[in-house]
Image (cartoon, rainbow, N blue to C red; front, side, top):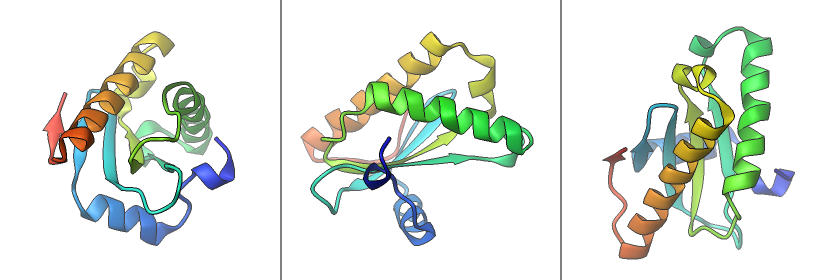
Length: 120
């Protein structure tokens, strides 16, 4: 992920999460908000329940690789991805599948014009 494809400011994280448009799976929570720029942006959050700093940094690195594979940054929304503790127990294929499912659900909701809270 390049820097212009990331959500970096705390205020942007807060505003996206405050809108509560979310899609949930075992390993991830995906919050979305219609994009404001010409390309979509993605933010990553890994809580302290995942482990100490070294573990959280590894999870972020792995998540960035998944995002580069799944997202094409032409989506009609900006998103925040929160990794859940189950993430560390899954292998790459399972993580990839769950993230693709969430992205597809978000895309279908945005295409239909409704984007409310959905669980996977």
